[in-house]
Image (cartoon, rainbow, N blue to C red; front, side, top):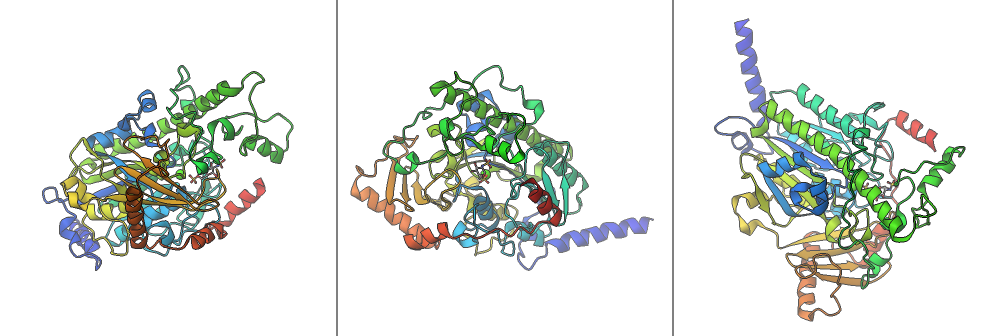
Length: 544
Ligand code: SGN
Ligand code: CA
């Protein structure tokens, strides 16, 4: 018995050490262990879908003060709140693909959600590198990249509604083979339970890297019934730019994502009249999408109607956020209760930002601040001082290199992003001077012109190039809400400097195709070939 125990301890030790002895990274074994505690660093990467920084109380906005997120704030308080993290393409699948690969959309190939094909899971991603280096890896929740996740020991991802998943009766695919439908729980609760379950059953001899990814608070903002009464006794303030008239911004003026004009009956939780066929009732619910006028009552019109739509929208959105905050809290509690807090990096972010009524909008896609900027809080008790706030400019392609770097794994040179670990160690020279953006999808959904641009610490220059040729320039110091396009009145030197920097970034990131080539990328239709189990396809077809 004694011999067996000694043998198994020795065996475990060998297995653990061998698992770090990867040809990829010889330095890792010594770096990855805390010298004092001899424990490897784990990672929990938490990502919501469409969670605006304005709806996280650590960021201090007016609305978040009325709808606080104490658990997400715990991560910021115990670590850092990052104030200038940007996505390179503000749309779900493309942002996720950039995060996984550390590469820009046009390089990893997944640059459009609609007619953009499937993510090529054969390419190098950070979960694969963690896995190779002895980590136990898992992804649970929203994936939305078509193909079955690769690089994970365990995956349980949403597959219905084209990979979006639904709030109720969501369908999940486990390890690319088994499909299950969750009939009881709200999707956030189901994902929360699955993560806690995976954590409690994991192999404790190995470090872990878990992607914990919510469907909420994505459109159509359907909260768990336990939150239905939340915020029902007060209204939220309107954002400053709620009644923007888009003057001087042609692309914005052509949008189809206005709270006043494009929220449909389904978004507003209206109930179809009895007796309609399934097809007709779906059509009835989608009414409003294309700007068709509707009101829930004969008397609710004009500004009052727009106000009612905003309150209905924002309250449901924030109720979804409340569920996420609880689910973040239970995982943080698990880490504390199981002695894992000190050696686990926890990140909370969203696939992109979102409009909560700013410029009169919902949705994302624009290079304007609310959708370009991602919320990002991170705790790493070994290297990040509690209560850190940083305005270092970071892009989502930097996440993979940073996570690898933080645990001591070498960052592959093919990744275009770079580690921002140095930001927490006072390495100013590591910091970016500007960030780059490129969005391709057109016209659905929401009619946002393809555009690319650059943001420096003060200015933002954007080129809308698809069915117009329009430049916009904002001075973020004097006009943080981006209401005044100063392109035609700015000094030629300033414009020339910014264009030069933009041009250099396009060359550096290998995104220097001609306008015609970029338009072709928008026009090309690459059908998705879902690598999903037959049972899912059949049940989906039955719905049509
Ligand atoms: C759905 C939504 C859109 C949203 C896209 C992309 N419409 O199509 O409003 O922009 O997803 O979202 S819905 O009526 O079906 O909800 S993303 O998060 O996948 O990028
Ligand atoms: Ca999204």
